[in-house]
Length: 265
Image (cartoon, rainbow, N blue to C red; front, side, top):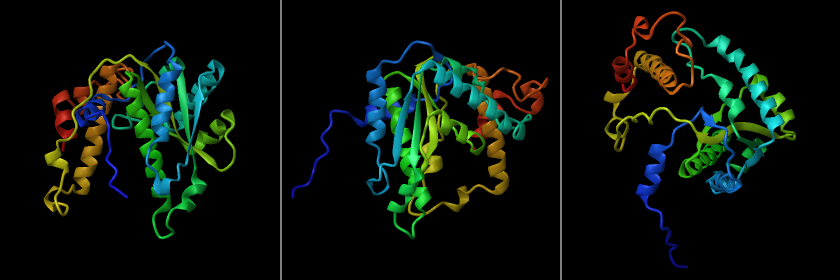
């Protein structure tokens, strides 16, 4: 049997351009998304790699206005539990969820975790399952971006998943891994730069001189949350006072320059 050659008209530059321009979007125009575009996103998810080609995913396309409204209510109400536990000046920079009520289409990405048994017994089976689902979701993100659409994933929590399983009539054995909000983006800022390759690439073995100490890791968490908070204020995803009370950014020890510098460490 001869060697199979991957023949495609797409170039690596095309792919990298989509990856670099993609960004999570939490502000949407209300215009509907054509069915063909949604099908392209689903097709991208379908062709994702998965452990042992298990394809553990299922997709639910949600366009019905009442079901979208009910989902947005449940998700917004239940997230308050998380907000109460991770608030304050250095707490998580929660985005304003009012945008959910303007999303024209959601895609529920459910997974069959029972298919973990497909994978080798001595491996981290659940990790393989998660890696498979993550590859699927990434494909869907890129397909949305390639068509000029905005998207974000909505993380699940144990305290509200049961309500959502019932809302979407998902049978036993399946779990909601994420829900994608998809629509025409109302963007107000560009994508931030990423850490340079020289900072993150190691050859043959991990360079111990670049390993973060526990203190450095904690500082990066604080700095990254600060950058994210600032990003969300600039983009309009959060009110300017969210998480800050009556304290301006500078009184918390942050400036745009210091946040960006600390976030790169």
